[in-house]
Length: 476
Image (cartoon, rainbow, N blue to C red; front, top):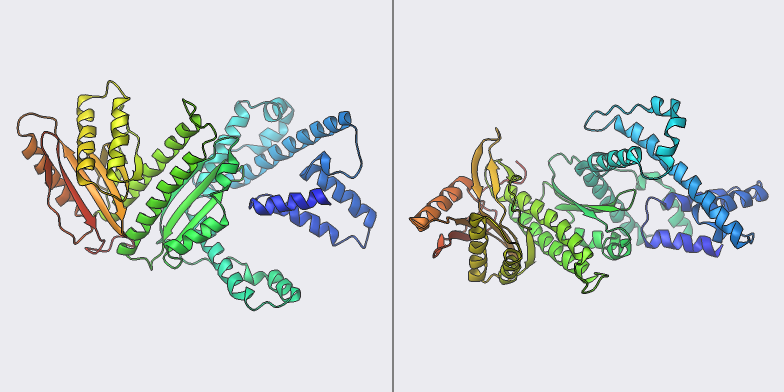
């Protein structure tokens, strides 16, 4: 049973929730050993073979036989997993947010025609199924509501276990607690008013162990405590294929606007540090081009870009729509780092390594670099030079932002807005006037005042602390 114990230990240590049911299968079978020991021995051997592999079998087999059995096992698991995938995709497609015509009877009737497509190689049909699987994972299994509900349930159960563990004195009391279903039944509150931000963290194929060091229950639990367990729900959950994690942060009705800004600032700081830790785990060392680092940069560009738009929703009065200019051919990565001068260096490296940038874009980037160096901000900061369009609820243009940065230092949240005009005549007055119009339009949620500054021959800018005390925005 050594192999079985190691198998159990691995599932528990890696928090492999999607294979935990296999542990239970072994225990359930053992409950019936008294009735038919030989049958139970046989069933456990079958279970060991399909769950763990040939190495777990009692009976010794030749190397040639081992290869043959491994191949049969792989084929069996492929067939089982594909049929299971088709089954749950068909059932769950009935409840998806977008109607799909998943013609299961047609697939079954014509199954002989699809055998090669379904079970050999990675053809169009398999890719279509996998794409549909990813879609349902994003819109149902790991949707904002699902993650909220899951996180809420985990917090309740964890709290009950913590309280009960102080009162349990023996194995019998522990057993009675565990078999009492009422201790583990989901009790969901009204999560409708919870505002949620959600990120997709893609795992680089072959490097899941690097992620597993940082994505586990202990981390999830500690961050919930850090952000305020009564104010927020932080959730970190892998998908069934274990090739992505979904991270979400939801704000409860008990969280005020000033509190939410502090939590967002801490969350931003943790994301910047997470990116740094993943980069340090880089298995390719100083190799260039570094595939691992390129993957990490791309992933966090998306994460930081999403976070900036979410923050804008919290600090601007009206219920505007925020979107990046998708037609901008000179997109610039969203930067997250410690200190504005480090951010300036990263931006400088960017435009020095990218030739043929439009003159107007180059002026905006250089303007942001000048301002970042000038303000000398020492906190964690996220910077974007991509144009952000702000639309009203009828999707009519309100204004746009040339450059934006958000920072967090000493539990204080700040925002940097710039307006760059690349024109010789009246560039200064034009930049200041446009930035003032933007500030009046946006009506930032702060009682802190600061004046517009100007960087000669570059831009006008405003660097202002946001305290969240001007009005209540979070739970309108």
